Image 1: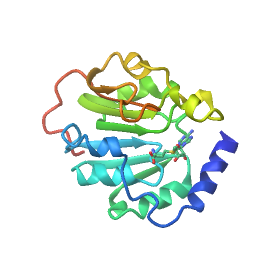
Image 2: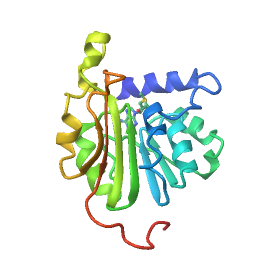
Image 3: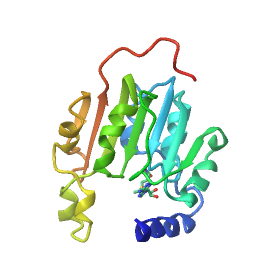
Length: 194
Ligand SMILES: C[S@@+](CC[C@H](N)C(=O)[O-])C[C@H]1O[C@@H](n2cnc3c(N)ncnc32)[C@H](O)[C@@H]1O
């Protein structure tokens, strides 16, 4: 974790202005699944482009990342002052239970966190998870195999959730897998904005 976090700090320190302007291309196509209101959590939020998109979708947003430089960039997003930003090592952080209407994770893989993500969702809450799959190892042989999914792994790992949209792997982008999944149950009325 130490050398990895150093690498991320360097990357974000050197980032050019506007490098984190655009939310993930897949997420941007999924507006009907992530339309607010309620609380949304973006794990490993990086420079905050996905937070900005979620905020404009009508959510109160929280971003977590281990990199302070990343959180600085997230804070500089157009609505960044309204984001809740938390410096956290996600390998060890606890997430509040039943708290979020949406959880998003893009290009971060910590399998030990999967059960906590399920618990953190409210009934009816939705998960968007997108990250590299093992096809990446063919395209980029030096890529760390610990950070790639098996094909179908997201669906299997989040079996407690109901699949809404599944692209494992993405037909147009075979090195990525992604899912939209929903926690069974009805959202509690009037409890969205605490
Ligand atoms: C590939 S970037 C993805 C950033 C963002 N989700 C995006 O799509 O632009 C991976 C992110 O994970 C963060 N990260 C890596 N290890 C972490 C950890 N243990 N806890 C929290 N964040 C971590 C890095 O700081 C970096 O921002």
